[in-house]
Each structure stands twice: as C-alpha cells, then as structure tokens.
View 1 (cartoon, rainbow, N blue to C red):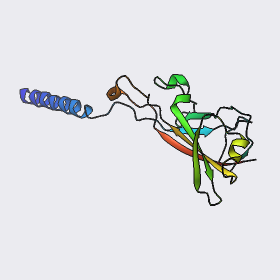
View 2: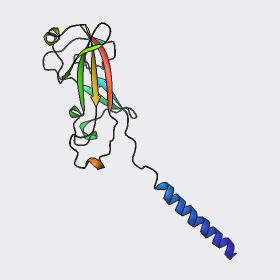
View 3: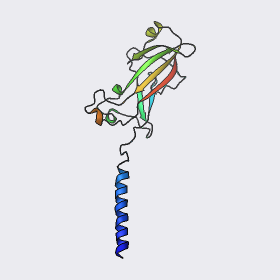
Amino acid sequence: MKRKLAVLLLAALLLTISMATFSGCVDEEPEPREVELELINPITGDIIKSGDTIDLPTEKTYIEVRIKDSKTGRYLTDNDLPENTIKDSYHVQLIILDNDGHGHYRRVYEYWPTKEELKSESYYGSYEMQMSFDCRPKNPQNPREFQRKYKMDTSYVKFYID
C-alpha cells in the first residue's frame, strides 16, 4: 500500500514538474493579426478595386485608406492603435505606370493630385497606389516591451483616371 502511494505521489510530482516546464515554453502573446488595406474612391466613397476607372476630386481632397482587421472584418479606429492615429499609421505613394505596366514615377501624396498636376508629369493613363501600413508608434516609450497587435502590410491598387 505504501509502495503504491509512493509511486502515485512520484508520478504526480513528475507530471506537475513536466507541465510547469512545458507551459513555460508556450508563447502567451498572440500573433499580430493580418489587415486589409482599402483605397477609397474620393468621389463615390466606394472601395477602388484593381482595374477601376476613377475621376479625380477637387484640390486638397485627402487620400483615404481604410484598414480592416482580416479576422473580424472590423475597420480599425484610432483607439485600436497604440499612441497613433489611423492617418499616421499608413502612407501612400502614387506610381505612374507606362504602357507596359512599369512604374516610372513615384510620389508620396497626402491629397489626391489634380489633373493639372498629373499633366505636368509624363501621362500614360494608368496608375498604381502603394499603401503601406505599420501600427508601431514612431517613438515608443519602451521599444523592447512593444507588442505588435497588427502585422505590417503593403498593398497595391492599379486604376485608371478618367
């Protein structure tokens, strides 16, 4: 009887030690989540899909990009990002494409360009918007302790301007 009890206690002790050891190896931090970047048509408010033709808006129309959590389908807001605003978490580059689809000119914009601005550049008729997202604050207080909630992402949308 004493022998069975000793074996049971030893087995329980080994099991407890094993569980503690293996659970210490498990990463408790969740993996950063995927996002989807959506370029918004400045005239209609719809999502611009590759191949769409759009009209350019009036001068000083802000380029809007929506950031959607791929898992939940919910659009991110300023409250979802550490020390950031949605506007500060992404940047866009307009790329003018030649007839073969090669990018020849890149420019960072905050506002949609006007037709006059684009006429001053070599005009080919098709464009691509590069959207890059990163939710990491520019100057985190504790860089080593920062836990990324969303993955960095870069997306492209090819479109035409009417």
